[in-house]
Structures are given as structure tokens and as C-alpha cells.
Amino acid sequence: MDQDEHIEFDTDEQGMSANASASSQFTSRSVFGKQEVPGMAAWLMKKGIISNETQAKGILIGIVVVDFIIAGIIFYYFVIK
Image (cartoon, rainbow, N blue to C red; front, side, top):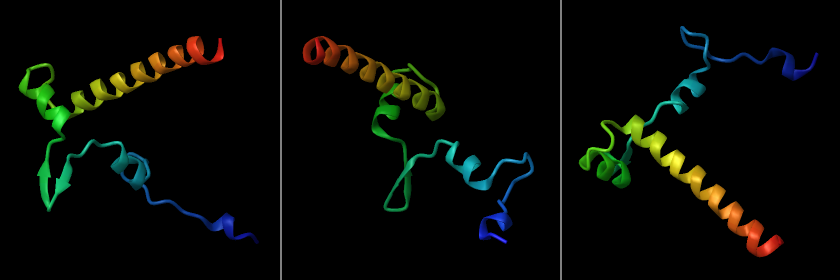
């Protein structure tokens, strides 16, 4: 018998693994044990663009995706072509 045949995963009530559910939640960074909202998220909330940190996560991921697309276009036209 292989060692891999006896692997078990911890699951919560919904059947998700404990690590997957913990990593899918957005948590603020902690500095010296004090919870702190990341700077860009705090700025977006202060300007009224978003109302909570979960929305900030979505906006910031969107900005990163757009940046990668722009970088790819620039790379294609100026390096490859």
C-alpha cells in the first residue's frame, strides 16, 4: 500500500477544506499585532469609491490585470515586433 492512499483532508460544514476557506477571505494586514487597513484600500474607502475591503480587493485585482495587459501590449509592439 502506498502512503498516498491514506491522505485525509480537514473539511468544514460546507465541504470545503479548512485552508481553502481561510485563504479565500480577505483580511487586513497586521502591524505589531494591530489590524490595519492597507493604504490603497483605505484611500479608496476615504474617497467613497468603495464601501469595504472586499470591494477594494476586487478593484485592486482588476487594476493589476489591466496593468499586465498593457505591459503585454507594450512588450509585443516594442520588443517582439
